[in-house]
Length: 397
Image 1 (cartoon, rainbow, N blue to C red):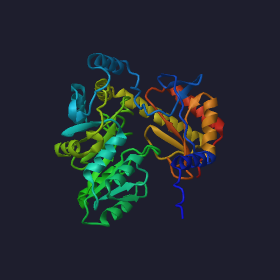
Image 2: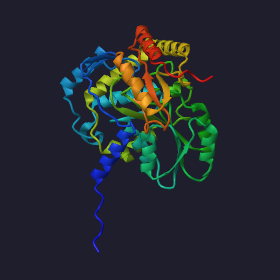
Image 3: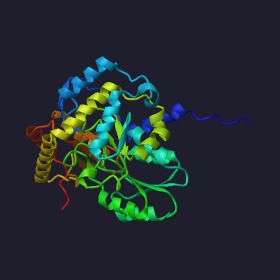
Image 4: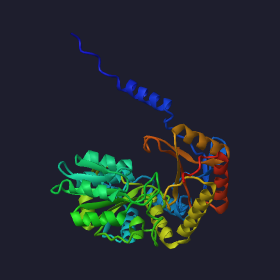
């Protein structure tokens, strides 16, 4: 008797894509023709963007552009190799030293993306028989990293320290990492870091914080959610942050002790087997670290814009999360409702992304509004006027 035919993987993928489209969950790429601060030209339309992660408005800063051009003219474009072969340039070394100093840690090591950094940390630290405890709303790369490591993954309800404690103490003998976002990318709230740090200290677990959306934004010097929470490197031994959000560049880093960084260089496969980021990009990121620390007005302006938006949204009766960061979601629940709202805002000249499952849990589709120091008061007022015209459901009392 002949064996049944093997499933056609491309047909299966096409069927899954078609089902996602039927559920109004299909993702699409849109090409930006030109960027001018918060203004984007897309398909012949000029839109005021409220969906970028350029929190400090540094992505188009002339000093970053000049540093990138200067380094590219001297070094070329590509680094030509992995860091451990011949791809590690002076620009990379200087950036790593600056990031270590800024975060108050012994060393830092660069990765090409935040996703790769988190995969690398998890794969290097964890093994089968170990445990990784994570917030359920952590970024996908933390979850994927734990799964790929072979460790047992335990996830606790969002920001629930008591639940995290139960997960952490359920296996007293296993080596354990507790990993959390510092600022949650879809909700904008800050993790209960001091409580989690105390828990990890008490239970001899290793705390790792992904501060992609807090680094550069929170804290007096922009050191991120750890600086804002007054946590030291001993309380949070593993810090990951990205260079493509508040710093306006691309890439990521992990900062910690000499032992941690040396270990990652030996065992983190996404570091070992990847071409180093272009040295010109590292040169631009170095300038961004200097500007982000020196120009404190950027954080002050961003905080003023956040307060202006939240006050205005409150006057409109809009339902907001508890976020006090640049990420200000308005949860609408239904995916089609979020799409319709985003399309109406675009018709009014505003670009606000509709975030739908599976990026967020089912029933929590939303408008994910992000603010930047590149915005002005008038931009925020324009957004509030457009939101008022949407006639969104009022906040529940």
